[in-house]
Amino acid sequence: MQTIAIIGAGMAGLACASELVRAGYSVTLFDKGRGPGGRMSARRADVSGETTRFDHGAQYFTARDPDFREQVALWESDGVVARWPAAGDEAWVGTPAMNAPIRAMADALTVNWGARVERIRRDGDGWLIEGEGATFACDGIVCAVPAEQAAELLAAAAPGLAEHARTVVSEPCWAVMASFAKPLDLPDCLRSENHAVAWAARNSSKPGRTGEENWVIHASPARTRELLDRPRDEVAKLLLEDFFSQTGIDPVWPVHLAEHRWLYARPQVERGGAACHWDAEQGIGICGDYLHSPRVEGAYLSGGALAHAILGQASE
Ligand code: FAD
Image 1 (cartoon, rainbow, N blue to C red):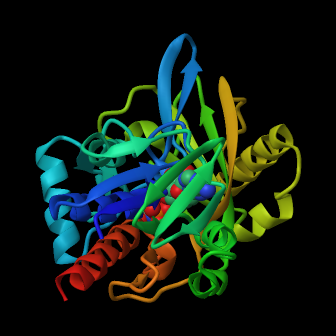
Image 2: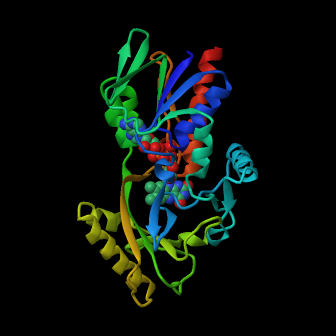
Image 3: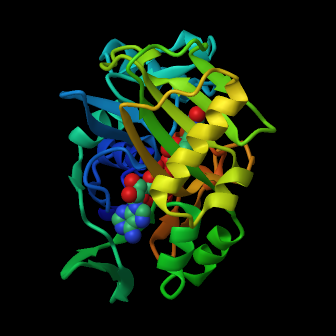
């Protein structure tokens, strides 16, 4: 097996690709996003005449596994990540934005952005992947997209793998991005397990950020489900009200307000141990946080595990 197409250039797909390329494989990635990030994306905004960015997906990550710690140490020496003490001793963030490690990995690989894969199908001993009028032929496929999207994409061509993905349910998350003209009298991070706002953080307290008083607010899974299909601007206002009533500070209207709905934010799994699935006979596999643990580290380890499974098969 030499030519691999990877669908999804988030942390899992890129971790898998990096290992395979190191081993001499020809790897091409396809991602529907306009640029690097996946669920580690950063949203650009013009606030009071200045361009600034909000980390509206993953807020920070931890590194416990020795392999991932080694990778994080390399990123740190390249200035791609830094510690964010406000979130805890073990909290790391991308610098200057959360997607920095994704960008760094992608820059060393062949990634097609804005390339949504719509179908995959068998073609002799190999595969064809199809999307938006283009077709790509390869020997093997890695599907590194969230569980629900993997289940749909693989249903016809790889029903066994689709079944693994179908067992996972992801929690949605409404994210609000707000800039205020004056500092709010609040600590940099707020967490709650039983309120409408599960997480709120002063984005501008992270290392290397521009912008004065940028906040990211994440609704709890329950509040998100309640508001799932409400109009976007209404959601932003309601969550801002939740934020002020929860914190008890006087409400102030932001100078910038935006929102994003993550339909598949966090898979409800906690498996531990490197996890992925590789169908060696068909030459197709799946990786992603939903096969390991619902975190950046889980995605990285799952992607690496799939690369090892592919390489292990090749050396048999
Ligand atoms: P993704 O990052 O989702 O990558 C999948 C990629 O596939 C995406 O780039 C997508 O564009 C692409 N794609 C999907 N379908 C297609 C298609 N048909 N064709 C082409 N491309 C496709 N983790 C932490 O460790 N700490 C946190 O504090 C934290 N907070 C979070 C808060 C929120 C709101 C969210 C959304 C996530 C959070 N996470 C957090 C989870 C973390 O972001 C994920 O676990 C991790 O980024 C998942 O990586 P992945 O590669 O598995 O998936």
